[in-house]
Length: 219
Image 1 (cartoon, rainbow, N blue to C red):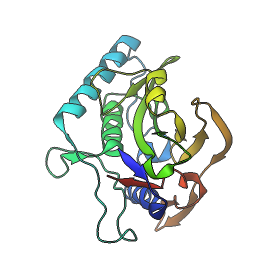
Image 2 (cartoon, rainbow, N blue to C red):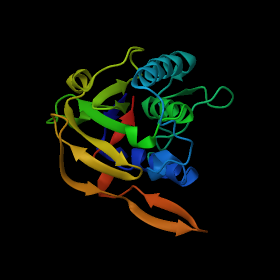
Image 3 (cartoon, rainbow, N blue to C red):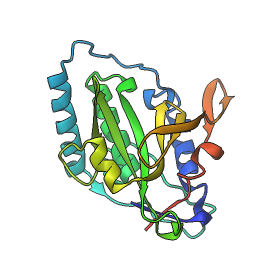
Image 4 (cartoon, helix red, strand yellow):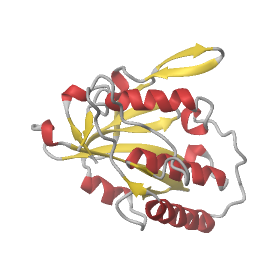
């Protein structure tokens, strides 16, 4: 969970910059599958995948918010995969990424997975606005939410009742779009500035796409 603070405008954006730079060719970053997709996986099996992965990650790893350092100019909200050796704790973004990775390894297509972010609290008093990220997974026309707060799957109505305020939704890879308080997409689609270093694509998320979502300071 996070608190909105205008002094940390680029905290989250710098964290996602780091992740996308380190894993530039990962399906989460590109929106393109580069792992084997199991087209024969049934809807029932996929539902079991979601239940297992959500419960496993929630119980195997420890939820630990990123902490601001000595200066807001040097700290960033880290985005990373959790593992059993070096990173066995993390916050909501890390839980989401780890769950997505496990589903990809089970043969899911990245097109059925997306990161979503919402807020709870009073927008007129953003100092106390809480932000949270979860993983949305699609099985056919149904959408399921994998959340850090509970092992059972949630539906989109339930998560949006907890975090009903303006947020952002990952459409595909580096492409994000705003969502309104009802969860409906609106306005233009935003993509980060993309540049190449030694043939590897990098993305600059410190621009308009994450202006709102970047203003997050962990408690």
